[in-house]
Length: 240
Image (cartoon, rainbow, N blue to C red; front, side):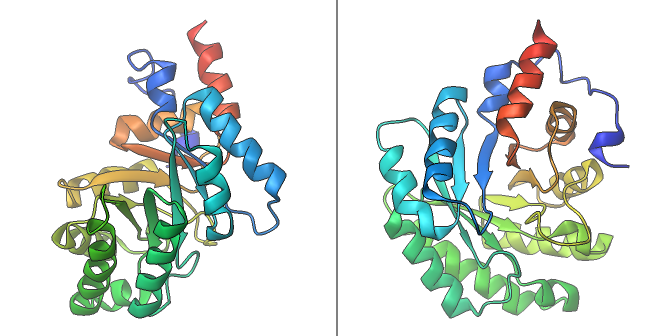
C-alpha cells in the first residue's frame, strides 16, 4: 500500500506546518529547468521555511549565492539517476558539488553492488564519498539513495546495513526517476528498522500533504519533493 492510499496518519494533528516545512527538501532536478525556475525555487524555500533546496550541479553556485543569507541548505546530487559511476567519479562529483556550494550531498548507491550483495564494493564506495564530506568544515551531510522500489526486501535490508556501517547520515528511498516507483510507507518503516543509526529521507512520487504526513509517521526525518509549495498550502488548509 502506498502513502496515497492511506488515511491521514496520527501525526497530522501533532506536527505544526512549520515543523513539516523544516523536513522538506524543495527539489527541482528536471534537465530542462531554467535559471529563473531555480531562483524561484530558492525564493519559495525561504518564503515557506523549507530545510533545503535540491538542484542539479549545474545550478549549485547559483542557488548558494541566492541563499547565502538565508537559513536554507543547498543539496547537490551525485550519480543521479543511475548510480553506476565509478567510485573515482562519484568522489570527484561530490567534491565539485561541495566546492560549488553544496551543504548536503544526495548520492545514488551502486544498484549492482546492492543486488549482487557486494558488501566490499558498496562499503568502499560509500566510505570514499563520505570522507570527502567529512573533511569539510563544517562537515557536509551525505544521503545515500538506494532506489528501494527496485529492490527486494533482503536487498533493501542489505543496503541499509552497509550504509549504516559506512556511517552515512541518511538513507534515502528513491531518485524519483526509476520506473519501479518511489517512496512507500512500508519502505520507510523497513529502512528505519534496518538502519536505526541513520536518518531516513523519503523521496519519489510524494505530491500531497497526506503522503508527507504518512511518511513522517512511518519514521522519515526528511522529505524530498518537487511539490513542496502545494503540500504546504494543503497542510495550512488542514490546520484552519
